[in-house]
Image 1 (tube, one colour):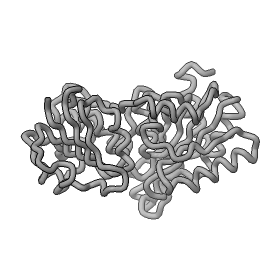
Image 2 (cartoon, rainbow, N blue to C red):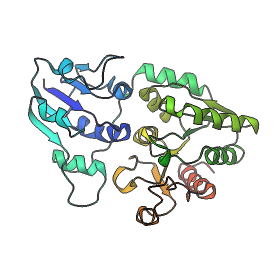
Image 3 (spheres, rainbow, N blue to C red):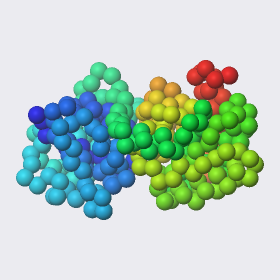
Image 4 (cartoon, helix red, strand yellow):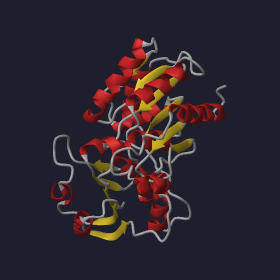
Length: 309
């Protein structure tokens, strides 16, 4: 039995990308301690370890002393890269080093652990998450999930464009689908409500998926016919669970942090280098060139690849 400490990144999407490194070292007889922001905690609830320790709800997510008092870990996966990982007592410490080339984060983790392949994200579900997802989707034959949130305004495609694409799909090739608008926190709530209201006004069946935790969101992704969202934790989760996932990029680099999965695709307007040269990265215009037509076309390609004509 090994003692494993996983120190999650502050960024939730990066946390999902780092789960492949955790899965690579974690055994069912091990004891796992997770140090993460409270929102990320549910992602590790069903991890295949003999014991999983996480901060309790309402306590500070980075309370290192409370979690590791009296312990010495066999392996510390330091995905945050700050003083926390340096202070954690461990026989083996794994952290990312500057990459010698531009590559995806899953490849960075593979190099850090000496793995022979990219370490794809792994999310472990439990029945609680599946039950919560089933309550939201009901018996809908098709489910279109929108994830319009983002950690800052510059990463968010306009809400009215999400509504326009959903309208075209739900009244066309995905006729009869339920549209679920999913947020990852209170900062996404207003955007979700606006999209649902817009679709309802046009007779498109849409629901606000509400305050699902991230593990229930992963279970929801398993039921999704298609997921469209920004570069955020929900598209990372959807891709990791194998959902057809279209992620829209602007100020961040998809070559490094695209959602990773067998049916994941990304779309951007202008190249990142062109955005930087034009100043669009600084004034919040990085998503302006992602058009409704381009997103619809990419979504249809994903649907067709999955057999929906």
